[in-house]
Length: 173
Image 1 (cartoon, rainbow, N blue to C red):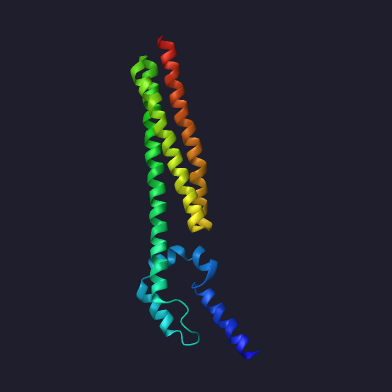
Image 2 (spheres, rainbow, N blue to C red):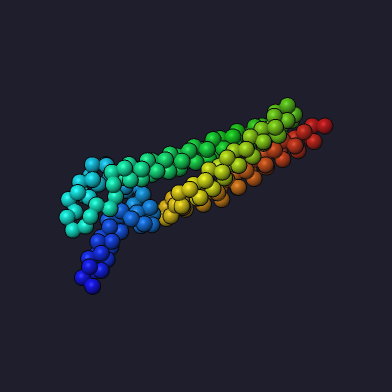
């Protein structure tokens, strides 16, 4: 019974310190990435009550996974920005083409709508890849789901720009 109590306390301590299971991968993801490798190895080596649960190679591996996750989140943000720039330019050009009755610009806008569609698919792909591979929670999960919702609306705005361009062509003829 005493052995079971010690085992329970040791496992409980590891989990509460963020070295095991879902708690480590959820809340402590960003905090762990900011801590240095040496701080964690010192903490592990100074803990006399339990055995070392996470090896140095495992710490390095987890740190690399967290860095990769952060890079993927940055890439998601950059892709969203690039898509929004495409859409903003399309709307602005569509309005200018409409007032000037410029069919050449309108045709270009219609062709560029495919770029917006490809950007939407790329952002959705990144989001799904993050959801499947990283299994984010809390703030990161909200960020990814918000991106999934926004990208659909952004694509629809791009379609509206193409619709304005089509109307411009129809009105010019």
